[in-house]
Structure formats: C-alpha cells, structure tokens
Image 1 (cartoon, rainbow, N blue to C red):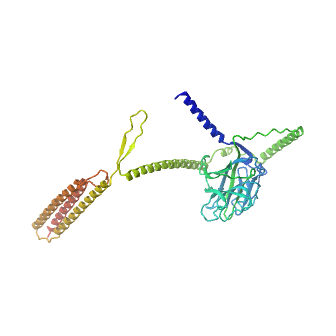
Image 2: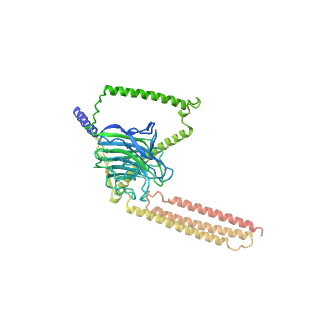
Image 3: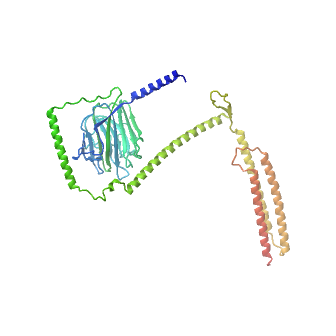
Length: 507
C-alpha cells in the first residue's frame, strides 16, 4: 500500500470521527435539580433545592412519595425553573407491595408551573401544561396491559382519561413490569432536539447497561423552561413508591456550550457578616456533637465491629443475586446463539426449497482467492420423483412378502394344533409313531417355508434398492428373524410331545 493511499484512509477516518463527535451533545450535571443519598434530607426534613408535600416523606436514603396505605397522595417539586433547553433525567425508584396487583402508580413531570400535592392525576394536578411520563400499575380499563409506561403531553385544556388509562391521549408507551424487583428499577428520560426518548431498566440485574428502549417521540415541542417533579398516589390497593435518585443533566449542542458564570464580588461588610455566621455555625456544630455523645455513649468494644461485616443471611442473599445475574447473562448468550442457529436453519431450508423446486441439478460456484486457478462448479443433486416411487414400490413388495410368510406360518401352526389334538391310540409305540409323523410334517412345512422365503428374498433383491432409505429392513435381517421364530416353535413342539409321552406311560 502506497503512502498516498494510507494518508487518504487516515484523512477519511479523521473526518468520520469528527462528524460523530460533532453530533454528541455537551453534558453538565445540574445539582440544583437533583437529589441522591446519602444525606438526601437535612435534619429539619427538608431536601435542598426541592419542596415536597402531601403524604410524601423524605429521609436520608430516599423520598417516599406515597406510602403503602390506601388513598395516599404526595409529590416533590423543584423550587426553581430550568435554565436550559435540553435535558436528561435519570430516575432510580422502587415500587413494592404485598399484593400481586398494586395501585395507582408514579409520575414524572416537566411542566410550566408546579402541580398540586394531592391532585387527581397520580397525586398531581390535572390540566397541566407540559409533559407527564406515567408509570401506571393499576388496570382501570381491564385490558390486562399493566404495569404500563406512557408519555402524555397536555396544553392545559384536557382532562386525563382515567377510565381508559389515558390510552386515547398518550403519545406512546410500553408494557414494562416495575413492581417488586430484586434491584431498583431505573428510567432515563431524555429531551434533546425536540425528541423525547425513554429508556427503562427492569431491575432484574445490578448492571447499569441493561437499558431497553420504551418509547421515542420526535417533533415534540415542550415549554422552554419548566419545573421537574415526581408524584405518586394509591387507591383501594397500595404500594410503597420510593425515589432513590433524581439526577438531572443539561444537554447542549456542540456549538452552544455553557459559559461559566462570572465571579460575584463581595463587599467588606458582607464578608464580615458571613465570617460571623460561619463562626456561629461552627460553635453550634461542636455543641451538637457533645450533646450527641452524651445521648449516645460508645458501645461495648466486643460489638464495635459487628456492623462492619455482613451476616450469613446477607451473604446468602448476595450470592443468590450474583448467581441469578450469572444465569441471566448465560440465558442471554444462549438466546443469541439460538437466534444464530435459527437464522442458519432458515437459510439452509430456503436453499433446499429452491433446489427441490427447480428439479434439476444446480451449479454452486466456489469463490477462489486472487492468484489461484479459476473456481470449479460443484454439482448439487437431489432425489427425483421416480426414485421416490421406486423406493415406495420396493417397500410395498417387502410388506406383501412379509404378509405371505405370516399367513403361511399361521397355517403351519393350525396344522400342528390339529395333529396334537388327534385321539391317542393307547400305547407308547403308537404315541411315538404319531410324534414322528408330526415331526415329519413340521419338517416338510419348514422346507416349504424355506423355499417361499428364498423366493421372496430373490424378488426383493431383484427390485431396485437405494441407500437413501436408512430405516428400511434388509432381507438378511428379515430371514434371520423368521428362522429364529421357526426354530423356537419347533423346539417348543418337541418339548410338548415329550412331556405328553412321559405322562401317558402311567396309563
């Protein structure tokens, strides 16, 4: 390969990489529109940059939007509107309950204004302006398609259709089960360049790469700025609706990267004021530490390290989950292999069908490597119709010969029974004469069977045979089976006659 060709290939690859990178948006984490553990909630129960209400409960590990009690509603909303056009939200949540069926569900909101904390649509207000992604766990329309994930856009004039589960108003959706999973379920909602994409993780594994596409809607126009929110509600049935993470990332096109905010100058008076507040906060913190030590004395040294190690049940559960993850991976690999095998079988079947339908030998040309001899055609032949008819005729002849042999054996058996049933003549000599006569008659019958069998075998051998019938019985096997059967009958008759002769000696 010359140097010019190498440089040309490098130039083409560089252009391709640049085109790919130019379409990747710039990402920035937005902490004012996110929350995650630990220390999710402060000591006073508030969540920084968020506000919640209704029956929602915030803790250091999660936000329980709606507890597992009947007719509960709650929501949590950001305090400020967004300052960016495109975004991606990663939600990690759990929906757990004791029953096989749960209610009502969870909802993600991006609206022009905040909703209520005890509304009619999954705990928030109806007639919203913006986007709602609903995780509906209860089947109101009895179509047996729940749990269901759907995206609904409202302009502030429409009421949500509860009776039909919003099927007439949704943009798109998918059937995904998100209740009672071993690991937390995840939803990744992205709005970029007027395209909405929802990815879902079913919570069966702990891998962060097992997302599945749920829905995709293009040419969707949402409010330029809005509030993020999560709401949930229960009805006659109840589930715990817990949100563990809510991570927001702003997206910018490659040519519109955000600029860093300018530094704010602090006056000397404000600086003194902030220093005093910081000193007061430090004193308050030390005082709280001392009070906490008095209220919670140090535990015994023996039990100090118990919480550092996992118990037997925790270890067993971890091993079970890791085993299930490995089984899931193996099943997925087997599924891929089965798909490959099915594809090969379909290609082979289509080739055989084309060969059979043509009815003539076809030539398959083998591709040769450069610099080798020209490829030689390979003849591919199949069985013809007249050959199949000949095989069937041969099998019919063999069946007819077997029927003749069976009928003849039946006649021999009947004659033997008649001979044995003749009246005895009273002496041992006569009994011996009758036995010899029966033996001679059986011998003649055996000679006749042998002649008929040889004739049938010659007819079978003279007929055309094919090696493409692996399940057919050969004439040699048939003759051996008949001979063994006749020998067993002959030995049985001799044994029976000898026993009868011995029994007649006593009379």
